[in-house]
Structures are given as structure tokens and as C-alpha cells.
Length: 284
Image 1 (cartoon, rainbow, N blue to C red):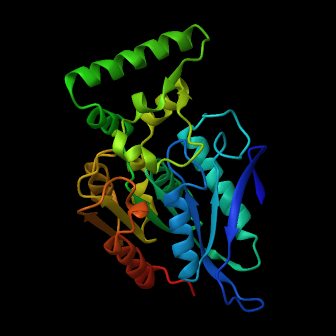
Image 2 (tube, one colour):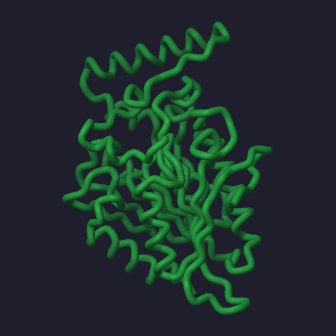
């Protein structure tokens, strides 16, 4: 299926739970993919199937510039993805099997940051789940490029990109120069993930601050999940979001998993999500 965001057609997959009765409406989730990924990534499909099995309708979709959606390839601007999320909310709200007052958002990594921001600025979102997310682009990048040499290289890239932008040029930046991922984890990236991005994407991430709006989610429920030792997105990012959030907000730091936590089939992660949903946002 497709829906439109700011004149662009976005591709998505709508999944409905088994056993729906005629005229019955269920709670639903928008499932957001990570940085330059797509709706068919392992994390996204796993979460969508889990939620549908628990009785929710789900909509997983490709952000503009990603997967099968329209838009300049690799232009994954944070606030534009918030706009895409709100357009997906519009679309899902009109489905005859969905309770429009009970649509939540769940995202992983970059998608988690977008989920938190979207929930903070759009009160129609009834619940938010962030897995391995972040709220302060500057602080995140500083930790991701932690050594003096790595930080100097990252700053040099920022300076060169800004110089070229001032001359009206577009500089492309390799994926792992933006967000380092250890080679042994890279198999978790979805097939078709974008491997280089226009410099504007780096600037948008650098300036993005879900921290500034996370408090506005309350009194709607917020769940923050994060690996206790995340080698991609610093664990402190979710701790900071928790400190700034209102209530009810739950934070769980999970040992024994890394960044792609839903792809690992960890029973604790799945049970944490399932039990939180049963308490704060049941499907019926």
C-alpha cells in the first residue's frame, strides 16, 4: 500500500491481527525503521509480527528517500521523517479496523529518536516505545566518535561539508563515517540500506533534539529500552531522555544484547515489551 507525505508516495505494509470481528477496531502501532534502513529490516519485521500477534494492527513503512518510497535517495532529514510519521498516522487513523484514538509509535535507533519527537509534538500519538534511541545529536556524535583522532576526523568532515554547502555543492558522506558500526554487527542492516548520505543529513542529525520535546509526551505512556552496553548508540542517550521525561515513563537497560536488540530474539526484551503493553496500552 501507499500513502502520501508532503506530495511524496511512501510505501508501507499494513498488518492486521487474526480474529478481527466485523466492525471491531483495535489499537495500532506505527513501526519506524532505523537510519537509512527500510520497512523490511529484521528489527522492523520482527516487531511488526510480534505486535500483530499480540492483537495490534501495525503499519511499517519506508521513510522518504528509503526503500520503495519516493524522495531523493538517502535524504533522511530528521524533521522530514517526523512529518512522514505524522502522515502515516493520518493514513492509519482512517482504517476501519483501527481505533484512531489508540495509535502508538515504536522505533529503533534513528527511528526511535523520530518516534519520541513525533510523540512529543503530536498529541494524537497515544503511546511511544523507543528502542536504542537518542535525544541529543551533538552529545550522541561526540560519544560515537570518542577518541581524539575520531572526533577530529568527524569535525573535519563537518567543516568540509559546510564549506562545500556554502559553494552550492552537495557532499556525500559514507554511512560509517556518520554512525560507526562494528563490522560484526553490520549483517543486521536491512538489505538495500543506504550506504552514503548527503551532508544535509549529518547536519540534521547534529541539530536534532528529541530531548527538547520528550516531556510533552506525558501523561501518555513512554517506554525506553536500551542495551546496557550499546556499541552504536550510547546508552546514556536513553538515560537522558528518561531524566527529562514526564510520567508514566519506564526505562529498561538490558544486558547481553547490542544495538539491534529486537533482531537477537532475546526473551527478556520481548517480555519487557509485551508486559509493558499489557499494563499501559492493551490492544483492546
